[in-house]
Length: 601
Image: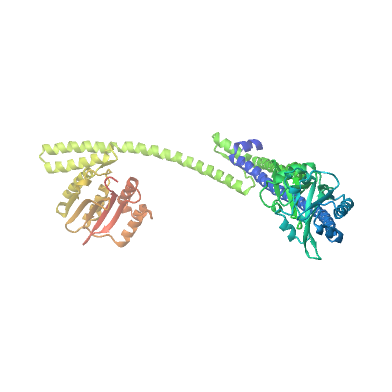
């Protein structure tokens, strides 16, 4: 026994030649890549969510500051209106009602309004007073006004103004008046009812026009506002009142068409750009304060860090692939002796043996290979011995074939001598014996029809009858559909001979042999019965065991070796489900039942 020469194999060649290792490499890459991508996706998602949440929190803080500033402006305007409403001179002049007449009352009222607007010029651009009969107004600059479009006294807003009970009723941005004028572009109007508490009764409506620049200042230059952030002040109908930047006006026009509640919209898409949105609603005016910030701008810092995040994550599958490569190298070094042994075996050297690898699993393979080689060499040795024995056996068979042919020719010569001498009975016996001998040495076919087999059996029994004279009788019956049934040649003769030897020879007087061939339950059945002495229970048990293949028939039942040979031939011919069965005949004797596949099976 020789040891294999070690052939070194590179890790790459091992991976290329092994589908299992290639699949392992792919699996390791995926095992590293997929978790990395999942971690990246989770980290990115959480990071985006945190950044957006923080951006909304910051925006909400800015909105609170803007709301505070707007509330301060509203309170200031409220105080201006209140100061006029409780001024006795102002109320009495309005109560006079005839504001159009160029009287002293009208001049005093205008002077009072001009004083008020001059003192609050940073907030107000115009004051407008109206009664049921008359109108008066004053402003810091002249503008064309249409009293028909300016008056609230007869408009749908009158009832809403009265319900405020003296507090300001704030309008949003209105459509451009039919009569001209651009006040809605530069001012925001608020109005309150004027009451005469001495009467008491409602005497008129006071309107203040507040500069939009005041509200723009309220939402501009706040702490915490980023360069890309825009604040909008919208009225109840989402029309723009003020914006913190020129770009905000364009955004305000788009928001008017957005569906849904602004307070519950985390993001808004305008002109293809997604904005993170935060909004507050003022309780006094119903106006919206909205913060808009481009989402891409908010996430820009996150996106800039994406490459930095991906770099270490992508290293994970590379490390997994490197681990697979190193594992392949170790495996290559470990299995090189085994591979070398396999190469030598392929080249025809069956004396090679693989050394141990010091790995339990691989050593199991090595031990199996070495054991297989040992068994194979032993089989080769045994087969060589069997070939020698087979050659000797063939020579013996060739030599033995001379005797039957010589005996048959001799019997034929004797037969003609008997016929010439008139010994016809002896001639018939010699003829039957010759036919029996010819049938036994005929190798033209392995199977014969049942009728041919039964014909030979009848010739055999005829010869036996001459021996036993009146002590032997026989009867043969066969169903018509079984006459051409094919079965192995010379299958029945050993069974019939066994019935003669163990049955008829032991009969004190007359004995009989009955052969019945019939079909039953889809099988072909041949019963060979004799009325000689029954066999003992011990012998029958031993025979049954031998017939089922559970014993050693050569030693336990040598006198019945013919039956066991027949059983083996039937199993080779028909399979395990068929064969011999020993039964007790009534009143005495033995039945040997042969079961074969039915016709056409």
